[in-house]
Length: 208
Length: 221
Image (tube, rainbow over all chains, first blue to last red; front, side, top):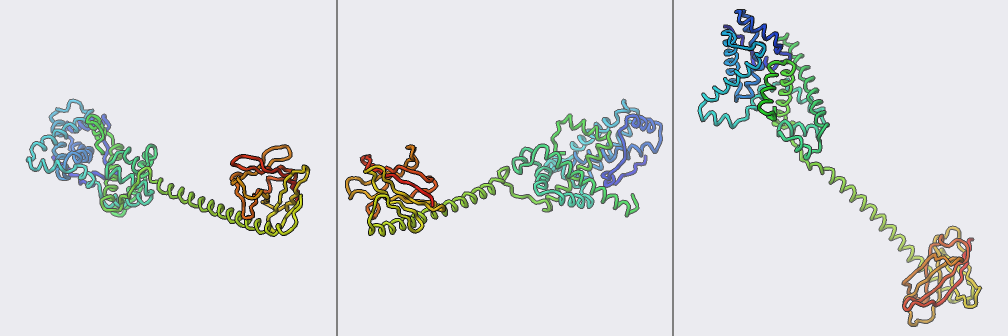
């Protein structure tokens, strides 16, 4: 079996592979069971980035997340080939359950010392590091410039210091509907800038 | 992403992410955004500001109020000062004029108007019918009444009451003491006394006793 290893950056590229239609999942399972080679690659393309993202939020390093992804999809493929998947239409649920089992086993295998150390670190840090690249930095810089000082304060307090909205409202007096609009506006601005930069880069490099 | 979902909600959400491309892209977009914000915060380009909380408006508001109060106070003090200076000048003028008038024969109905302050020297209406006429310039803001009192006796303070022809009370000055000439002099606002006849009563305060009554006719020049 030949797995095409998808680079981690591709997993975060906008407009990635599509999945989720139960009928297409049923079709994909059937094709894998019939021995179609492309179908196995398609499983990896369709679910690889998402499994990687979920694994990243459960583990402590990018390398571990890649290993967990590979192990998870290997087990899913094996289950499909051996016709152990009872509900092909619920493929997503099966993949998620398999990932959880793989994570659990990996956690048990780790040494006490490494487990203690890894439990002290915040897994979310690795998620953020994975998504941080030059396009993101440029886009966020442009977005922040377009915000008022109090709005920038909100973003820092909410996403970096992780205070609740109530605490933030007490500190800087921005609350309620204003918060929702601010988040929506900032995120929209960021998305537009990020996509603009990413597309420009893709066009320059001739596309990947 | 903030760990706020319950376990079951989290699983449902993650299962949905595996199924829904649009939502997965939204989540990734959000993750990039949060990563960018955290990076900016760490690198200092999204530095924390000192907040005074919801009451941060209070200090500038209090400062503004204080400034207004101080300004209003300064204006009020200046106004009082001006008023005091005017009163002192009027008193000095009054005393100077009356000292001058002492050297002239006094008559019933004497009218004295000299300098800037119209002054009426009142004579007691013992005979009935006699009145003092005070001619006020149109521009006059104040006027003065001068009443000679018997030589120093048992009365230390006095009051002066003014009434119109119908007996309605118009002014009442209390706690008056003799001036350097031994007389009672009061300065009154001219606009309270349009042309007409007025009754002036001079009383002692301790004991309360009517000492004299005068008729004053105010006319305009």
